[in-house]
Amino acid sequence: MLSRCLAHAVVGMLLSAAFPAAGAQDLPIELQVRPVALSESLPDGATIGRIRPRGMLELPSFKVSGMRFSQLSGLAWDDDDGVLYAISDKGYLFHLQPTFKDDVLVGVTLLKAVWLTELKSGKLLRDRRADSEGLDILHGRNGIKGDAELLVSFERFPRVVRYRPDGKALGELALPAALSDRNAYRDPNEMLEALCVDPNLGVLTAPEMPLKDEPPGSTRIFSLSGKVWRYPTTAGFGISAIECLGEGRVLLLERNFGHLFGRNAVSLKLATLPMTPTPNESVPVTEVVTLDLAKGHQIDNFEGLARHKGNRFFMVSDDNDLLVERTLLLYFELLTEPESRTTTR
Image (cartoon, rainbow, N blue to C red):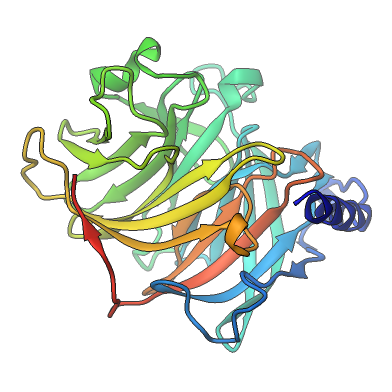
């Protein structure tokens, strides 16, 4: 494990060296990426669990317009403008353009980098107020260019804020009482990591780890409209992303990550949230795939998830600005006819 981390650090330094600090006039930038196999033993086109990898790239870390391109924690796809939005947990918003060859992700261009602002003052987000984590898009698939809005969820000071793609804050959405109380969370860094928008259920969010008053083995998914669904937890894993698929179906990314040389595993799961939740009864959950560094899967601290087109998705890791961690952008296909194990709790 140590030698692998050191090798990652060396590669990271080489990629960073390829990008001196860049100014706004230097954009767009075609990133110098490195292809990474999700598993060295996986043949091209093969599947792992219920997913088929279609390219994974290691992205460099560098500064642009005073913002470091790193610590990516959320993704959203704008189908109308062909932009993949990525936020860092420093309050930066990056506009990316992925490149494909034969349905495989082969490159990424950085189009724009902007700083998220405070709603009332218009000042740039700073320090703990800038801990942006979850991301989704409004009006991103309506056939109209230039009208998209972004929803961002935060840790430290839990809130959900609407933004323009240029980083200007438009409004803050009211949270359920259980989520607006900072003291209800187990840790300031375990707040609103996950966010998505369902056409019927509205804005959905979930804390990374169960709130203090949750019973063992359980957490909750909240709709900002007031509905609540109980969701079964797995020991050591927290919810780092949620993607709405329509009709109450959600794809969740769960993560068990220990800094430096600890555990590193992620799990993708499918669940369906009924229009009328059943109190105290967990929704059924289907495991899609579990990827584990200890089992030879080349993964890192995956936090962001976004649907691209159909059953294709992006997933990104947060490198925590550490040389021994990487920013990995994975593109994969979700298989629709799985052999799967469904569990409830």
